[in-house]
Image 1 (spheres, rainbow, N blue to C red):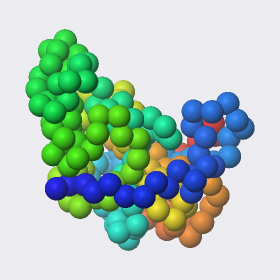
Image 2 (cartoon, rainbow, N blue to C red; image 1 turned 60 degrees about the horizontal axis):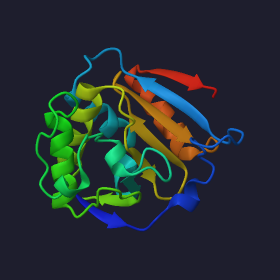
Image 3 (cartoon, one colour; image 1 turned 30 degrees about the vertical axis):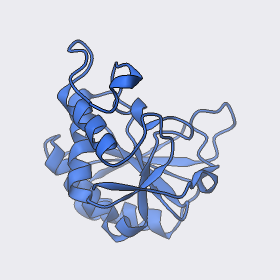
Length: 191
């Protein structure tokens, strides 16, 4: 098992209004490591270096509140085929997304699940998620949420990591210091 469903933490991220027309109530940084090639292994290492202290406090969840996990593995299929993920439409589906759907079935994650999961196997899960992010490109990634509500992050197909946070806090400060020590580029985003 890679994942186990956990409690809903939507209320802790009420400040993260990605899909609403409300005024922006969060800040964002993007971290780039231009010294390394854009490969799964390098992006995985960057995630571990920046977020390792918080791994026990991180859960994985939807790209935005109310969006089902299937939106990440955007497979063109009929819902009745969900129990047996196969390559369904060679024009649209790919091996990475089909592997993701298979993982969802094996871990009891429903097709339209909109909640959060505890990560039981970081290496395998990151390999699976990053293979979609890097190889499929443009897919909104699932996000990794700190259960205390202080921040969440997502990997991007450019091999950057986007970090959303409500306000500067000690965890964000630590992440920025680590990125600086690594020589990574940090961009402060105003949305």
